[in-house]
Image 1 (cartoon, rainbow, N blue to C red):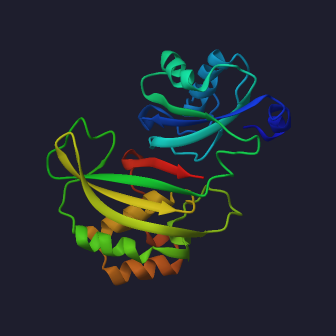
Image 2: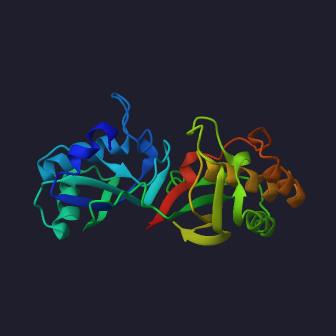
Image 3: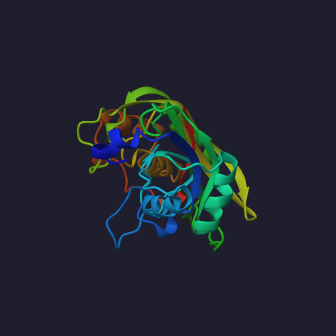
Length: 262
């Protein structure tokens, strides 16, 4: 939502919050981009205008990067449109592309902001192991061809739990004045079935995430799983607050914004 338009937008009758899922493969992230670059927000704003009959400007819980997916992205916008809440997901289905879906709609207080009212978020990162690829999984997981020590990875993730400075996992390009301190409530690794593949999935629930923080955590955790660094080495890199010590950022395809809590 453009800051200069926010006051005028809040004069509208309704504040609508949507839970949105999308396959981010074909988009330059969530946040609005100048054409010809295309982001999820570009599509949503343009198509929702057809449903509500007025100009739509969205606020979003997270600005997912190019290629990153979401199952529980939350957006809100102000509108005078009168469409009933239960009809919004159905109407959205008729105008949105197949890779963007409105899962739920609700009316919220005028002071609710999908971005600023968020208390915490869960991100999932999926990993496919083995020598043979799977075309039905490749869009949604990082394919690692070499064996991984899942127990060592799980132990590394436990080191992150609590309130810490996460500068070691912070990429350049984010808001420069933002505090690097975040609280991770839980960080774990489990297996799940997906198109007959057993995927390793990293689940991180945190108060918030720095730019590329989740994908950089995955990159260092994978290094532990491949026995390139020890758990002690993981701890030292984490404590060093130095991004240059962490391997290259994990690919976007494996990351999914699973849920936002308010």
